[in-house]
Image 1 (cartoon, rainbow, N blue to C red):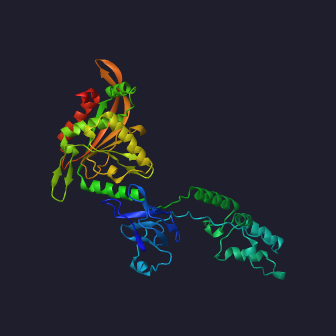
Image 2: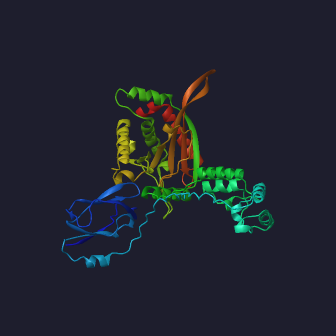
Image 3: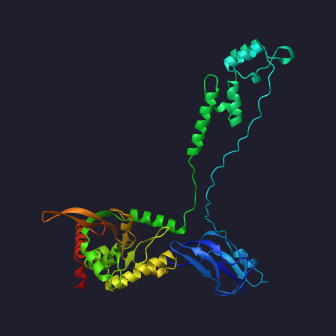
Length: 433
């Protein structure tokens, strides 16, 4: 029996999906479980499998953005009447924006060489002196020959055409230049044409070009969520520098057992400290004006992809050791890069950490990942000259950048939280207690 293929709802917040590829074409036999088309959502690209077998009789939308549960195709038996299915389908707007192609320059065409003009020697001499093209003058002499008087009359009469020298006319014709575009009050000479040509070439070389391309589903969702976050939270930013020497020693000591990163260590520290400062680990339910606090930490770790930013979540990070946290961060980051993250691995976060230190960034203001109320940015480690007991020492310092929602987190609470994180980072052995 036939069936409509609809755009599936792959997550609670999904309202639309973008069809990026059909694996089957109209007329192809489809087995139950076969991948029939690919859908790009806000975070992932998913292959959609057939729930029944049959023949792909019709593709309603070959590509583009389609609302969830709207029909995109029809599977039925080869000889089955599908007219009722077609009648059920509705027109679904497809949001595909093709890149604009740059305007192609027009081909230049060379004009033919000037024909010889019949004129008296005096007329030719005068025309040359006055910079007049003899081809523009109608002769009144014998056999239409141009006389000196014709040249004078032409020169003294109001001209609608551009006055120019023969050399300028010839050069302009060779270069495909419209003399009317050369602005000059008096006659256009050869040098004027050369100057205009050089200016025109510079304009063409510097001509800006614009290209348009539709936002990907991920980019559109990032845009919407970041705008929503900025419009929702009353954000305040806090910065604090931390001595990283002890964390470096911890990394070196752990290296024979397993390799950890600064992010691994900081996630472990934050998972401990957030339980001491539950407001930083909370969220706001605007519908009932309630603050939700927790006795667990689900740590989001931002991962940068070519298409945008994605935040996989380490569930219950507060009860996991550094080695387990390190393994999960590496695994989730690899899944993010290979587009194999599951929806459950990207939801439920209570706090987010984002690291730009590898790019040499010294300070930034991260945007809160709603519905959370805080996010911590990790910056690069920089050698800073410091006076230690009267001696100048260069100490590796890291700047931390916290963004917190002032609706929930007051400045004093944020400051205490940051100083507690600093205490742990400068004495990571506390984690053993």
